[in-house]
Amino acid sequence: MAGGLFYNLGRKAGPAVRKARWFWGSLTATDDEIIRLEHDVGLDLAREVRGQIAADDDPATGEVLNDVGSRLAGCVANKRRSFHFEAFSAGEPNAFALPGGFVFVSRPIIDLCQGERDELAFVLGHEMGHIISGHAIERIVTNSAVSVASRTAAVRGLLGGWLRHVGVQFLETAYSRDHELEADRLGVRLAAAAGYDPQASIRLLERLAELKTSAGPLDLGEYFSTHPTFDLRIRNIRQFLRRRQAR
Image (cartoon, rainbow, N blue to C red; front, side, top):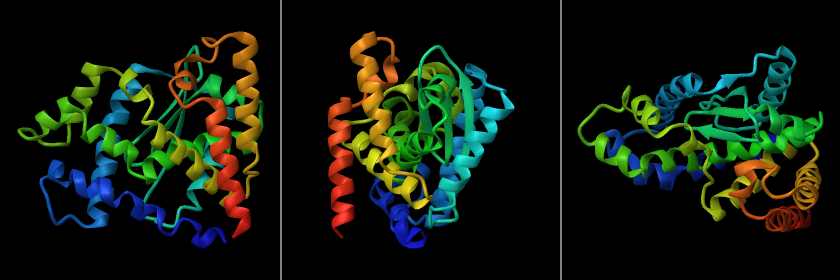
């Protein structure tokens, strides 16, 4: 089942990519070229990100991230896509995805998973969902500053300077509610395809909801406060899993 599960997910980026193709200066770009361009953009951004955040160099953390991330990436049917996972130090839970497959995860959000790889798989799958579905590149392309600059400057080398100006905080802001809920569904599908327990997503969100109630809304940081409510995300995932089981 896993082999064909994500066959069409790469295609979901099509509308967003077609909408943004003027940005690359080509109306006839192939899927291969688009993926390569996304990777170039992500690589440029990732270099700047690494200059603005503190890397978490714990070998054990890196090993877990790469192990779980590799299993997830292995279930993405479009093998032209590559993914890279990096941990960083921060005072609160956070994670963000860059075009081209670059996923950054803060140590606190890893700790919230309490060593449960099934839960971490959902977190990574959620961020990968933003990449696969085109949310990550669309957010960059539709930023007004990038749109204006891209008409007069080459893409390569442009975005690192832009991110240096706006800061990593731009990447940490939430997507639209629909995009976040779609990324949840894709994250659950990807985790299940990789052999992880899809119910772990609900366990994680339920535990975080309890923490938010007992510890106060600020303790979980902006990453969760700017996402849809935990109740809505849990309902969305449960509905998705019910539909999936009914097939």
